[in-house]
Image (cartoon, rainbow, N blue to C red):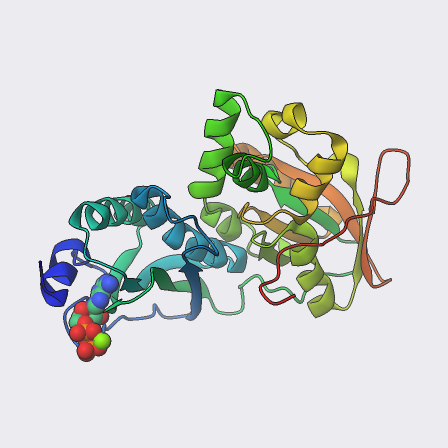
Length: 318
Ligand code: ADP
Ligand code: MG
């Protein structure tokens, strides 16, 4: 059995060249570049709630960092450093090795360094805090949407919900579709480059973690506006289209969580810029609706009929 400190040393200590001081002291030290603000966010993943106990540890390592990178993306911030607090039921070195490999692979892709954390024994629980930087005044907030702005979303929606339903045996998928949907659920790609490219372009932004309608609802509330969404324009993957009827497509794409795409608003005068960003990043950006002054989100289908949903998205307490 290895000690707490040997465990930290072996699995969670890596060079952090851009920090003044990383893992190993009572606090890490970092410097915020001149003319920038520090963006700080944290997201906790609880076993049984945010992930299934048997998830591959490398994918879990990826996801616990990815959901935090996604918050930086939604702010238009460049992620720089993160801390990792873990509560572990046991020391399983194979599990820890895989977990840290998955996490550091993603950290390396985004140039983000682990600079500290906390390690205790207890029920499996993983909490990452992420620190990023953004030029002063340029962060993408939830509060800037204006009537007349377009509503945009990146990628495709509903795939993570499809993956979860498949793992629970609620839908049957072809093996290709299962691999795709499962990767969307377990290894989301945070849209960091998109968030940065949208500085000065998007009037408001949020990442889709709890379901499109729930998350766009936060933009609408903060901005004191409403929105009309056209269901036909909501981007869906072939996997979702070909394995689910319309009712299920709507449920997963509009109220399923965990997609980690960005939903943002922008003035119509930025349409060309946004199309250029989409091409440069080889990422679909779909214009799905418009901001209006009447509060609330209205979704209409191709015939102009309102789309009704039982729930708008995931909430831990209701
Ligand atoms: P303290 O008792 O001062 O809080 P700890 O003994 O908890 O310090 O941690 C020792 C060092 O290891 C600290 O620098 C802390 O940030 C780091 N650390 C602890 N757990 C982790 C972890 N899971 N990942 C990264 N660094 C960690
Ligand atoms: Mg401590």
